[in-house]
Image (tube, rainbow, N blue to C red):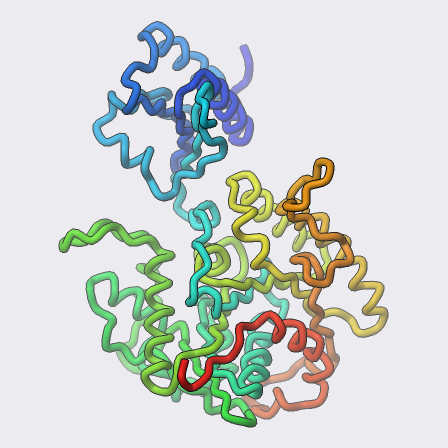
Length: 448
């Protein structure tokens, strides 16, 4: 007797059966539920006949044998036999991995992951729009790489160029950049978490969400605004109770409006912050989204759905590359690679100044190996293929360096509010600021 399949083996076996059924002409959907159990749905809503019962029974037996113990309670289902097949077949989370060719012959093959955490890594990126183009995500797979400090330095630099900058602290469970931009007692009454909670029940329109940074030394007419994760600490203000209630998608509302995903809710919160800055001063030219580290829906939403540029922070070690390789492979397998790769740029964090050129070349080589998961495989001469060469400084894998400085060790921005103007900050971040500034959208004119 064969042993039961492991989680990954069951998925590959179920996918193999699904591919074979699609090859006979049927549109099929492979579903994996919260426990990893698999079911195969045959979409016969148009054609009406998915074969005789004997063939269907044989398919169920084959699918069950291949996927146990990760077999769904109903291993194989016909759409016409289901009460509400459209809930699965027309779900916005369905990923099509093989389309039906114009002439027919084979069917469409689609996947649906029913997950709790990380669902948004699987959802398709939004099409670029005006809002997304001015939003920049700053993300690191692992924490402790200086992401929030870099966000602060970048915000101040862009403001010195005359831009209006909004920084949104999306590290909701461990806010960091807020403390670098504003004194706790001067924060607005509410933050991003408050908007997510209030808007879920139809409120949120009158929340005080942003404040202008009063601690950054700046020159010129630029501005830095902050939308903190939470509001000003005070008696009766509960942050953790709200945090526990924000991440879920919402069902259709009583007024008939459709379901709202967490991505749509977070987008609405950021838009509310942008609109508030526009009312108090002017429309932000750049919105910096300081995301949290790790595999979390906030990071997934920020990178794939809410920003036009994503700065991925990395240090050259096996843990970093294993993490990014896992994410890139997921995008490749779900067909999202082509839609997300050109908005990515690698930031080489904490680079030692001694021997930096050689170290950057090594990091670039390692980065290209991982980013290659997102690039096209070149076969012959294909001028439309996206596969930038190793030396291309504009490629996603080309590292943008932030140099490590001993003077940064032990630095406490709360005690030294002039830290950002110190000479060693310019030395550490100069190359980073110059490269990233060239990627920014043009500043708005007063009439825009």
